[in-house]
Length: 279
Image (cartoon, rainbow, N blue to C red; front, top):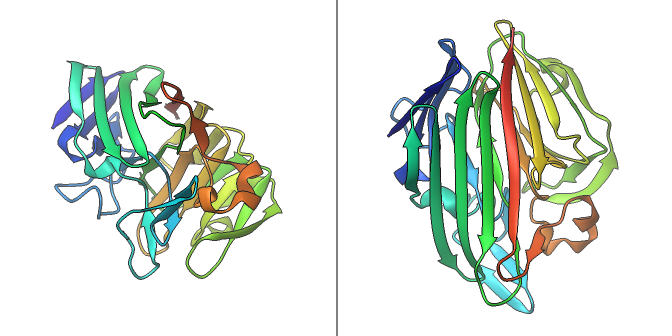
């Protein structure tokens, strides 16, 4: 486990388990629901990384240039593969200090061939996350990434963010269309129970808890798309900055709202997230 501390923040990272966050707290207040020794790929706690795609792939299939690439179904009942491959693979710690760390991951699974670099820093300005995914294959390839935090959700939370569209989804939680939507603003009555994707996201979101206010700001390839998951049965709220729509590689009609980027050999995706606390 990698323990970081700075600016009133404390984080525990699991490099050998997908570089998942086991915990994140500010001034002794839990920001993420603590993993408490659980599995970051099964439990609704901590935070994990999604790469080289995010959210759902229909049937675990990625159709690219006339070839169907198949991936294990992580949710067999739905018939979908979720959240990419990187969260099940280890990361190497390239550098570490009390308040920051640099980790790297190399993965080859056709059509993907990538090197990822993750920078984590804690300071007075907040939690600063920077992720780069570089395509190392010989031919162009689609790619995407995202962050899946399980924010602790006590009673009395309010949420605010702006967007332009909300995706409509079918019974297997795959997108079937989109409707104009200005985003969300309100208490749990407005969003509890949702598992929805928002396109045209402004790149900013505010979660106001009774004890603190969290501000999330995304830039680069992370700004533009946000997945919201608020299960009523678990006191968590997932605000997931992602680089593309669910299953968009197989749904070209929705690509204008958030396609996977096609990377040429040597080209990279990059993004930054800053999570700050006020109050």
